[in-house]
Length: 250
Image 1 (cartoon, rainbow, N blue to C red):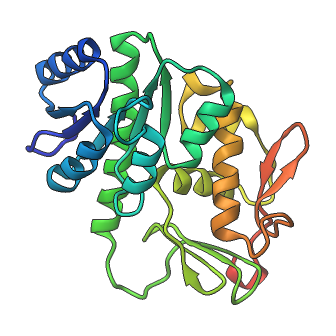
Image 2: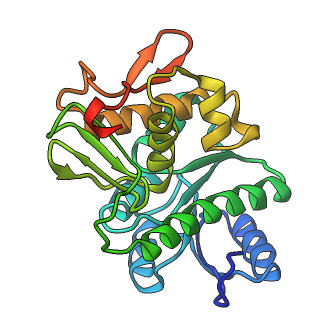
């Protein structure tokens, strides 16, 4: 749980009654405030009322499938979403990550692994919220990364603010953490393994699908032409890098 006094709100969207009962019991026993629902359409309505801080999502749902629920949720909520699915195929994982999932756990899974991933997702979201709330309006010198001139890519680390082409860009906590690792090591190629371990943790060192998908998300949001990236470059078979900062930004 987070360091706040209030219980963390978790929404569990799960079609299987036994799994739903299991998740409810285990999460409540650990102090979480949990609401559970089996239907995707009902889950959208409940999410709007409940305002969850984390969502556990099955993909095979009646009425409204999990991917559609996820796409609609991402229109207004940045809460971390962990997909719990029996499907282990890479295309299914990519679709879920493309729609805005932060993590993907294949059934059957151990309770300890699920709880560990919940803690990671909540820590990342809490750190993002804490830094945003502590940012001041001071115009004093702030550590920033800037490349591409006046209308290029700008990352304000103190405010956790990102701009591209002169416009503010909204990133999820995971997208921001990935961009932050690259920009803080600007000009240096970070390997797939390095990025996966730094952003997702040591248990994710082989999840190259995660990395490719989130790089694609960032290019869509940051690049003028994602097919010819100016900022997020690929070193084939090795990793990714961003250009060194502009000289006048150093």
